[in-house]
Image 1: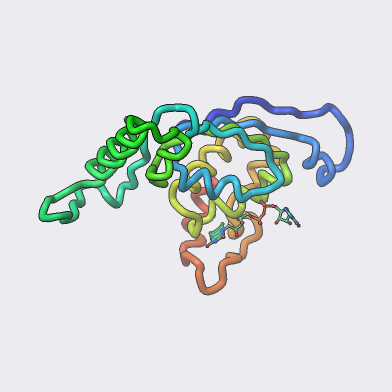
Image 2: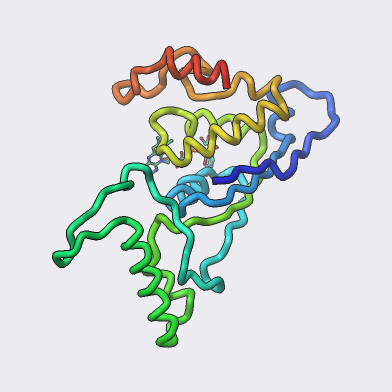
Length: 197
Ligand SMILES: Cc1cc2nc3c(=O)[nH]c(=O)nc-3n(C[C@H](O)[C@H](O)[C@H](O)COP(=O)(O)OP(=O)(O)OC[C@H]3O[C@@H](n4cnc5c(N)ncnc54)[C@H](O)[C@@H]3O)c2cc1C
């Protein structure tokens, strides 16, 4: 996964801190995340998104994200031992066979998996970034979007440390874990990680 800070729009106005958060925008390019991850990202509404289309690009040899947990794992299918990579390759062949039979790419793509890699550009203001990062840097967030959020936070801390050095998961920002019974129980470790990031 590549996370690139493409642009920052920081108006030179002197208004109070809470107000300026609405007027500063950052634009990111994220390349090589799964569709499972981008689906979670676009649930965050106060933002603008542009995502690579699957309607026109051929997805025969589609790039994909492989979770660490499936590495070296095999499943038995019709008495054959198959890996995650075998499934991806099979789905690419199924997709291509439909396209060869005249099925439009926009329909053939229905067989493609959540693992398909995508590229997305998005713009968020500082208020939304703080909200997003608080939720998605938390240990409760899914690993891929958490990895992406941590990379974004690192870039933002370099760009605007006066705001983003205070930003991280809920426990880091407030001293209290907001997850109740679902807490990861590792508050001290998490706080120390985000202090040193
Ligand atoms: C750990 C985790 C697990 C999750 N699990 C699931 C799940 O199982 N199923 C599922 O469907 N989703 C799940 N989500 C997604 C979650 O429900 C939210 O959709 C997502 O986190 C977006 O956050 P948000 O709604 O707080 O705010 P955003 O969309 O980021 O908006 C920020 C804030 O703006 C305000 N706002 C934005 N739009 C409106 C609006 N239309 N009306 C009023 N106020 C608005 C609200 O105050 C909101 O909190 C999960 C998220 C996390 C972090």
